Amino acid sequence: MTEQPARRLLLVHAHPDDESINNGATMARYAAEGARVTVVTCTLGEEGEVIPPALARLTADREDALGPYRIGELGAAMKELGVADHRFLGGPGRYRDSGMMGTEQNHRPGAFWSADLDEAAGHLVAVLREVRPQVLVTYDPDGGYGHPDHIQAHRVAMRAVELAADPGFRTDLGEAHAVAKVYWNRAPRSVVEEGFRRLARTLPDTPFTTAAAVTDVPGLTDDERVTTEIDGRAYGAAKAAAMRAHATQIEVHEPLFVLSNGLAQPIFDVEYYELVRGGAGTVDGGRERDLFAGLDEGLKPAGIETEGVK
Image (tube, rainbow, N blue to C red):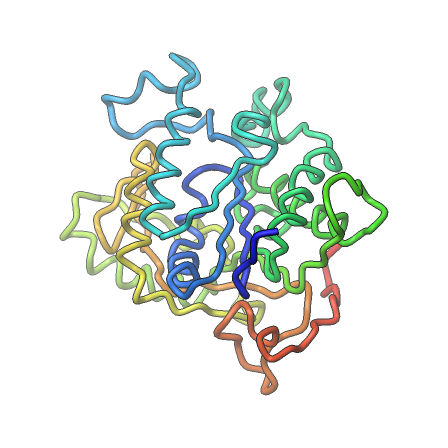
C-alpha cells in the first residue's frame, strides 16, 4: 500500500461547485499544508441552470450535456485549490441530479434522491476504507438549504461512516476504518450578517444589482452551534478562482458572487463547521482552529454522537 500523508480529509458534496462555495479555502489550506484532501461528489449536477448564454444549450431540457461539462469545471476548480483526488460517488454519472425538491426529477430512474441508502453508502465506504481519512465534512440533515441531493449526501455520508467502521460490512471493500471526526458545514449568523453589511457597501462597485438575503446562505445557524473555524484568508484568491472555474453555475466579482438567480452573496474565506462526531480538540471550550485538533497529539476521539446525530 502506498504510504499515506499523516493528515487525511474527505469531503462529501452533492454537485460540482458545492465544494468550492462551502469549503474552498479550507481545502486549499490543507492541501497546501500537505494533507491528502479527497472530494467525493454525488452527482454531475445535470439539472442545474446555466448562466452564460453561449452555454445555454447544455441544459437538461436541450442537449442534456451539462453533466459531462461540469466534470471539466470540477477538475479545473480542483487544480485551483491544489486538490488532486476528486471522485464521483460510484463513478461519473452513477447517480443523477434530482432537481429541486418536489419536482418530477426527484423520482426519475437513477436520481440520487431515490437511491437506496445502503447501496449508495457502500460506494462511499469503499473510498473511506481506501483513503482512511481521520476527518469527514458534509452537510447538516437539511443539506444546508433543503435540496434533495444535499439531504441525501448527508444521509449517505453519515451512513457510510457507520458502515465503514463495521468489520462485518462488505469485507470486499477493504479493512474497516473508523473516521475520528465528522463535521457539518455551518455559517454563523453573526458572521453572515456582517458579510451582508459589507456587501451593501461593495455592491455598487460590481456588475451585480441585487443582494441575496442572509437566509439564502446554506448552513446558516446560531453562533453557539459552531464549534470550529478555519482561517483560509491566505487562500481566498484560490477559493474565488475555484468558484470562477464553475462558470456555468457561478459568476464571481470579488468579494461577491452570484448563482443563476443573480442575487449577490459574499465570498467567505473563513469557513465554519459544527463537530458532530468525535472529541473536540480544545480544552477551554472555545472554537477549534483546526479540523484535526486533538488528533495530532495522539488523542483518540471517543466517537461520541451529539444530539440530533443518528
